[in-house]
Length: 185
Image (tube, rainbow, N blue to C red):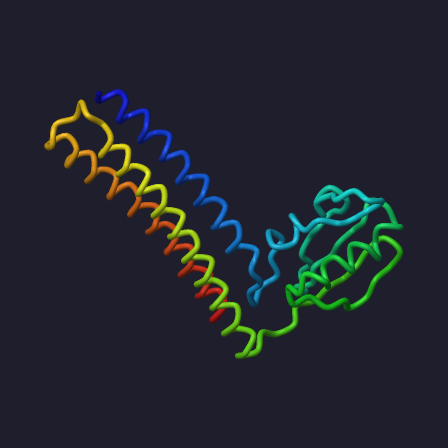
């Protein structure tokens, strides 16, 4: 039965890892006081009825004077790219544009916006923790249903499950702390 436990534990570890990546990715996409290419790259541009990630239709870079510069691969996409970034309300404003480049700056975060963003960060973290608790419950239910395990084995495996889930919750909380510090700086 040890091998069954190891297989279940491995499967749930992969599930926890996937969930952690999803929620950390969502946290990284929340704007802060710094220009973030991560928050921009994955935005979807709707072009001729097809959605494409921004990174597939343009080059992105940050200039030495802290401007986000988007160089469109096709000049006709430039207005769509600009609209996509502005519609996502990430705090960017257009400084200037050419037929194939757009220069954005980041508007300062007001106290009101900062408080709203911190609430969003905390909400996402709670959603992630909730998903981790569901995975934890799945592990505990598996242990309860497993008739071939002794009570000592079940207790041992339950402690392993508790530690596993706690480790992932701690990683998520660390990501939350990092984002809140970013917002506060």
